[in-house]
Image 1 (cartoon, rainbow, N blue to C red):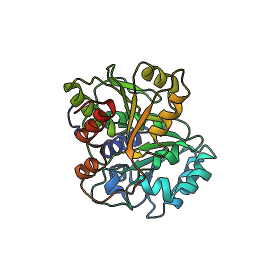
Image 2: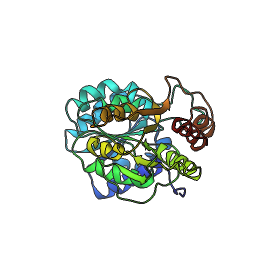
Image 3: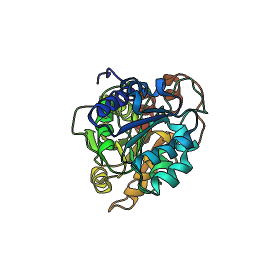
Image 4: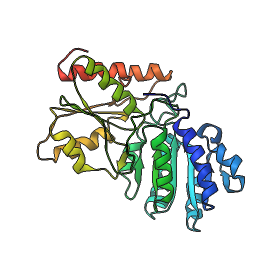
Length: 313
């Protein structure tokens, strides 16, 4: 695996600039965080279609819905926690219930937010957004998927929530990228690891470490949280002795809960072990420190999966 030249947020900003060149309907509304979210690239390229709304996320959503009714395609730009928590009521009432053509770019999600602290960490957004009717929820795993999903969201008619990581990370193996599909990044008969978003790269690295110790695992990447391919997931897990879900999110309501719901209704229910944040607020610290502390680094994850499988790592 190699490190991409841009982060997801950087890729999103550059893709929005290109969409602005191609489609005059493209507008971007920012919550006073453009330099952080990289919406400033669009502001520089298309200042007449960039609206700086300040620290007023609820109003930002309302204005976007109004713009959508005129035929424009508005993109919202802010940190994930301010979108999925502070602005959740107008998103529910104005965007989801009306099926408004509004696109939400939620930056700085998950654990890897560096030194910002618990007020800015967002690890419940997938639970909030996947429970909202009519909301498409996407969690790309690298810059390539981010560009594909940004373009898909722009063309899709209806609300979309796009979960973006702050920092650059390893690229995932090349392969077909499409909304609504699951990707098998590694195959093996000894168990299945199911992951999403930026965490998938660390999950794949953990599987490669375990392979060196004789534990050969299948790694399934789920970049689309909603809609989800239930049938394909059951197929991919049916021949495995156990399933482990891994996510940079709370254990409540995210990928793990969804996989457990799906597999329990399959022809052969399987034990699903969820590795995620265990009912806690995230501390302040470096990304490496936080990933290690919460068992989401490749090293810590490999050790946890090895214990679950009954082998030493």
